Image 1: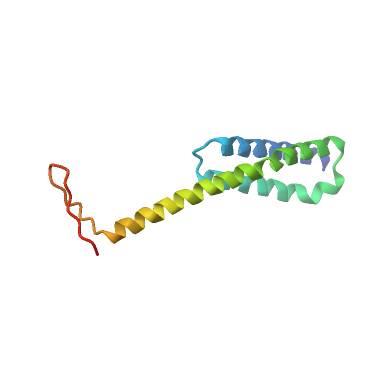
Image 2: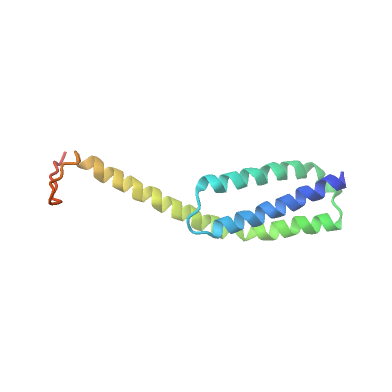
Length: 117
């Protein structure tokens, strides 16, 4: 059992580090974050039943993953705020475009005519 848990612990640590690196990039897609989080959850579900049998080396691997994981919360909060502001901006643009019925009526001089609802 201990032979099969070490690769899982290494995978968990690598996925956690990968998540941190992905989150530190400014333009990251939420789908990519969700995919990494799903992979980590699957690994953690496999590790959980084996937690009582961990030796010292395995515990250190788990603690390393926990250290990296603890630094993720502020980064995740920043990403959430960034995504929320983008959603708000899109909603405002949608509201503005719904207020005016743009029929793409333009002249060759760049003048456009619009009608208010």
